[in-house]
Structure formats: structure tokens, C-alpha cells
Image (cartoon, rainbow, N blue to C red; front, side):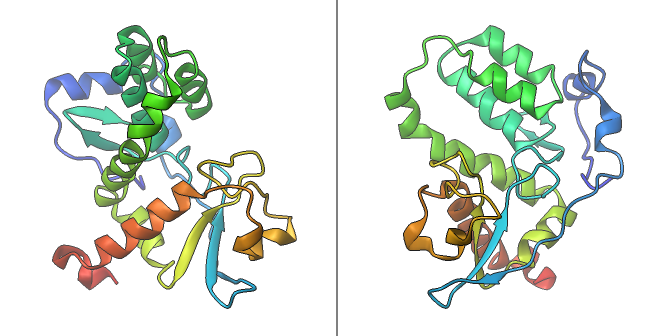
Length: 206
């Protein structure tokens, strides 16, 4: 398995056998290789988007946070969203699912959602989700370190918050000045990579 399994207490282990948790989805997970491209500004960019890419929040990756086992960073992000707005019912449903698309859909159903309040905390939560994901999964971290020297960018044609607002086939992806999106996920991953590469325990991996 790509994801590294740690020692869990009984409450966390029980989640693996919960309804909706399909452990087979995490066995021998394949991922797409990506390479940096030279932008019009002379800088290098590593673009990603599909769920088979390790940088996607949909990519299967076990990690433990706050005593809870998560199966992908999307699950952590949406779970924290539900908890933040005190929707414990949706939070529980999110933990019972292993399909990231379903998890994302559940996240849209969070009661008492306030976009202004969420905007104040969502970036911090996304940073935390990816920190746990890459710190606890050496294989995924190795892929992250391979992007050294480039800026990661989520080539999502529709997402103008976490992505750049353009798909892989759009020539405008090579010109950051033309991006329609903020690329928040890409910048988070770029900063996380640089941070982890400076950590003494990971320097031998660089």
C-alpha cells in the first residue's frame, strides 16, 4: 500500500471496518507522474488535477489526525468544515465514506454554512490536511519533493479558488498572469514542500 499504516487505538481501528469504508481502494494505488513545465515568465510550474495525481485532495491517502483515521485530505477538509459549523450529523457521514466525490457532496450539505466565516479558516484547514497527508506518507512525500524548484498549480478548469481556473489543455496555464483562479491549493503545496524539505528528519530524502 502506498499509504503508511500507523499504530491506531481501538477507536480508530474500528473506523476501517465502518460501513462505506472500502479498504481495497487503498491497495496498490497508482498515481500519475507529472513533470514541470517552463512558463512564459521563465519559472517552472508543476500542474496537476485528476484524482490519480498524488497532489489531488481526492487521492487515496491514509493519515491520522486528532485520533481519527482519514482516507484522503478531502475527507479531513470536509469533516473539519462540518465540525466548524457544528453539523455533527454530516461530520459522521463524512467519516463513514471513502469516496471523495461523495465526501465533497456531503460537505456542500453542511447546515448553517457561512461563507465569510469559512473563508477565514479554510486555508488553515487545507494546510493542516496536506501537512498530515505528506508527513505520514513517505511515498507521496517523495513525489512532492520531486517538484523542487517549481510552483505547483491545480489545473482545474472550474475552480477559481483552489485552482487556476484553466484545464491542462489550455495554453494559458503557462502564463500565471492569465490564470483566472487563485491557485490556493497549489501555493499551499509549494510552501509545504519547501518547509518539509528543510526539516532535519526529511533532508536525507531530498
